[in-house]
Amino acid sequence: MSARRSAAADEVPGAINVTLAVFVMSMNALLLYGASHAESWFWVLAAAAAFSFTNNTVYSLLHECVHRKFHQRRDINEWSGRFLSAWFPTGLTFHRMCHLGHHRHNRTEVERFDYYTPEDSRLLKFVQWYGILTGLYWLMPPFGCLLVLCLPTKLLLRLVDSRGSKTVEHIGTDAILGGLAEASQAVMRSEIVLTAAVQIALWYFLDLSLLGWAACYAAFAINWSALQYADHAWSELDVRDGAWNLRVSRSVQYVFLNYHHHLAHHQHPDVPWLHLGKFVDFDAPRPSFLSIYLSMWRGPRPLPSRDTERT
Image (cartoon, rainbow, N blue to C red; front, side):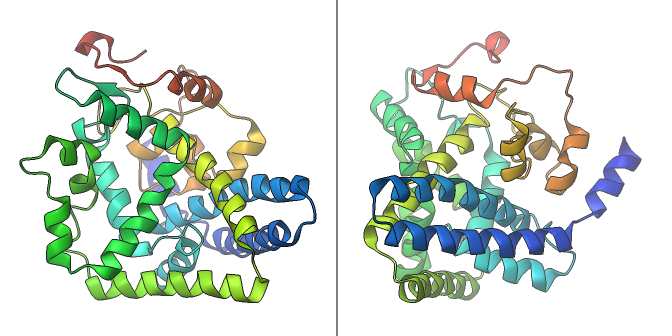
């Protein structure tokens, strides 16, 4: 396994990723244009539904850039990540900081959204939970980027500091944004400005309408947000093993670039998406995405005892 793991970790499919990135970004542009210029609600909704999947492929490629597994050349990896992140929209350095913070704090108290204790605010837990399911969770990265762009770093760090506040701690901002002080503010802000420029260019050159843009991004928000926590809901409370390898159709697995092999990713975050299947135990129980997703609509659960954590 160690030899196979080493080989897989080194085999970054750079040419495949660049080709995919150009294709899905082009599809995104076509679908945004179609939704904005469609003459009936049917075609607006059809374009939006398709965009919710193509933009998830874009996000999966951004995820590879975050882990520096998109391309062997660092400059291509970083610049590709900057343009891919514009479609979320977020910024590469900002998103890398948040995502790596997630890897450090996965299934700890600050990211245990599916369970509550007697000390927790039930209202906050349910607002967070249904915010995830309805796509409002998608707003957090763009809003965070806006704060980074507009607020001085010292003020922003004070705002997200959870010390003395259980509410702020349970929102998880301190854990996710804990790398703000170390990140290059100039690079982070310049990438966010680039993202804004890309979005403005899309509006100008594609003559987008608010209805078409909003329909596409609302559909993407719901699709993206649902997967981000279905990958973790009710899983083991462990930083490394607290995720699922979910069962989905082969076509969906390809569109999301093996993102549903999420336990394998958390156990081997340096393995490119193309090779994740080598690290999935297909004989072990693997819940379906649909079963986890539907169970999530019943709301957060009381924190189980240690011997009944996995369900």
